[in-house]
Amino acid sequence: MKPATAKWYDRRDYVFIEFCVEDSKDVHVCFDKTKIDFSCASGTNNIKHQNVVELYREIDPKESKHRRTDRSVLCCLRKVETGKAWPRLTKDKTRSNCLSVDFNNWKDWEDDSDEDLNSFDKFSEMMNSMGGDDLPDLDCGDEEHDTTDSDDEKMPHLE
Image 1 (spheres, rainbow, N blue to C red):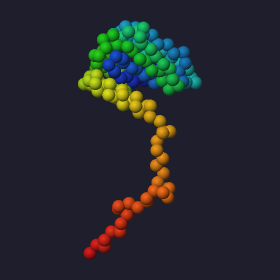
Image 2 (cartoon, rainbow, N blue to C red):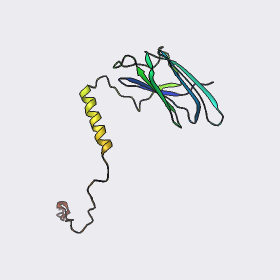
Image 3 (spheres, helix red, strand yellow):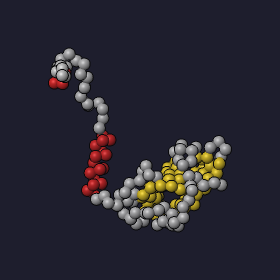
Image 4 (tube, rainbow, N blue to C red):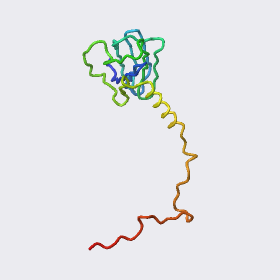
């Protein structure tokens, strides 16, 4: 068995691990307080993958979940001590070739105040609820609109 490539990122209440395995089958994820055990088969050759990750801090196994897609398996680990940042995913400080930080999803949330988060949530909600159906018609080709502009005047000749 070979380990699957994985990326992780930290949030206030959760830690996310994405195992990058395409066309996964027979996915098994076992959450324990101090570790996660992941295994699956992938591709047409049924390559077997297994990762056992000893975690930096404890998680709540009952509140932790995973979701399989065609390209990966995303695990959402509920922190026991919410609001505390994890400087790394693993208990040991050793580096692993198959594990990296997911910088596309990383957010430095420690310095965010709750007010900033609420404002961000409201802004996100507003953006998601915006539709394109009620936007005004911006077609300027109609003849009823004045097409002359203040900068359309002739320029004086230069000497």
